Length: 62
Image (cartoon, rainbow, N blue to C red; front, side, top):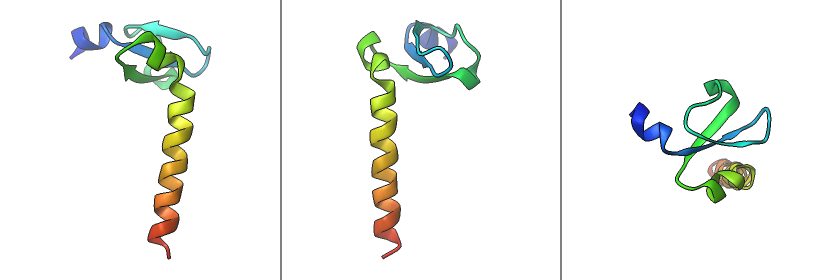
């Protein structure tokens, strides 16, 4: 698993940097992402997921 993680990209929430491999503490990073570009857009993906989950929760509460 660690070898695979070292070949993937991560978004560092503290610095805003994209990193390849497990460079930062796990609390600071989100991922993994297959490409640098996907990791660059990590915040967009997180926002979209959050909005989807909020919609799902609202639908469940109807």
